[in-house]
Image (spheres, rainbow, N blue to C red):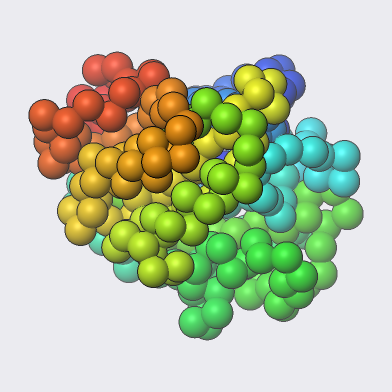
Length: 282
């Protein structure tokens, strides 16, 4: 059993999003688990799982829709991106290993180039160079590294980042403030690469339609730093600046273990339900 969590650069045209979900759902053995779309980010995150071959075929079916219907040259959104299908990670679940997922990432990446002529960067466990291992390196301003598979950029679909990684929790903490610099300051304070918390990546992003900002977080090791510790530090920084914390928004699914490690702590979830728990969905 392998999970995939592709991120698409479309969160406003729900007809396109529906087509992406349909493309995945119609592949035998691929099980659609979750879809989260955000108009401010102009981004959709889809979670699905199944046997390796089913997951590969579902990923390619969704890639075909994204490349055909999402024009990156006309795209605007708060979240950084380099492609119509921006990120395509494979995650080991039952009886699968990270090495299995890395091999699958390379196979799918080669198919994306062969079928669609969209170049591919390989990241995390599938990376071929140390520079490409971290997703943020591939998205940094001015990055011009050569793709691992293919060459150049597709005129409307850009490039796609494909890889293999352990499970992570993607979530956002909303702040009742329009001050983007303040959200970026908190993101620097908590992310590990800036001297913050182990297993934490973070960005400050605007939510223009709500008139607020958020700290957008990837908890890549919730064992090392449980979610409540991240929330407590963000809340402390916000409180000292007189900024109220609105709450936590989950993107995709969350393992039961991540919730258990923060049991007894109120993270002010805005959208957590029983259906958000990966173990129960599987």
